[in-house]
Length: 639
Image (tube, rainbow, N blue to C red):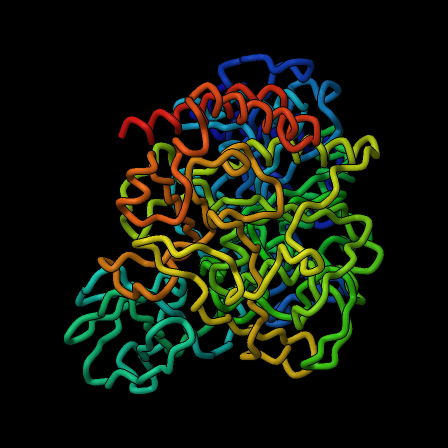
């Protein structure tokens, strides 16, 4: 059946498939708008045919339940006759048509700004093939998406949530923007959902500063006007400078209910026979914004449902660093990149003493979380160590950055060496926002292998590969000022970058001491500027270029002394010794490293084979990785 089937048919299917009994727990009902065979009826290994269901899921959350009391402003939301707070969210399920052929695990893909992530990542899907090579289907997963973010605009395919507002609440909304071009206007997108109470009020403020930690200067109120979330400034906005807007607003959404929606959907899938699935375990995956969501989800205690049952059995929190997300707050801005305002104590999962506030706790070791910790993989790139305030090193060091921590048995940390936040396309495009070309290292081949390792750990108890990350004890983790990055002509050194500052945590003493400088710890490099520790894909182990997790802003977009958000760099080696001498590049040329193309490809194949043996690369992906290495050789030697 196709999406265009009538609503009446949808209701019939709902009755037949989802309401054999009265729905229990916190999910009150489910409406199916469309149900159809996936991939035009293609079969995926032993899992067979897949079907997709699209609809809306409804919840009723009990404000009196101890598990919900952490939700900010829940007591101010309207309640139904049973005293519960109601909300609804979009959802999609992709599952084997014969549930007995699945692997018994639901993979909950925490959507990123309303978008699915696991299909393009793990399945290598593209616009022409939405299910890619079908890895997740071949493994037998039921994949679940549910809305959690209130500020997602209505658009085709967006997965969003509708939450009630905290009625009668007034306050100040704040947001920043760094323009990439000089312009008379600027949109502060993070607060698009908060209409100003009085756009012309003299209490509204606009400041400007150089860089994220510069000294803010007020902009005279007579020089700018506010219309919704758009500011018009006489003289215009300057590229590369940081502008901060604040104004009064009313009735904020109870944004923290997004955590409850994800919790209750997973619990429904896992525990309720009304869900119509054969799911025994739930694995959660989140990348970037949704990885930060998962870190906050667990810190706030949402991995136990209202009946104190375990929600997620396993979690992969990807490219989140030590940050969390601005969701369970009044005037929340979850759309924000969280570059400089999302990292607060506790940083690591294990309980440690904070030398600043004196508080002792961990992100997975506090009164809300104890006894409900899942198996966890944390995967990060150089961007999460270098860029902004994500401070990934703090998930495995003490809060002062002085010592390595001993990770708990349920946790693994993997550093994807030589990568940026999201892989750039290959061949890399000419530099635009960054000063250097963007980093094309495709870490998803390692992520596919790590997914298989997590699957075996969760379902079969097979111990996953040991953590791979930079450490203080072997000097593969150092202060930023001590990184051994070479002096490459035309490349700005990252050693001069300032450290970021702590953000507030209202759940602990002193609000977590916001404004305290965070330790600036980054992966050490070799003489070519390539990171030493972590999972080193063949691009990195047998390099043709320097690959970094940082990239300064291009002069054309202003602020060239600052990093451009989320970008790394790809800085090719000189092709010959003559080129190296001509450009005064300290790095050996490609011709000096490898006798010919075949010798290079042989070394790549050998490096890839070791990764397969160590379970950091799937055997089925090795030919693709080797081919791409050959393509990179051809690109650089023929350009």
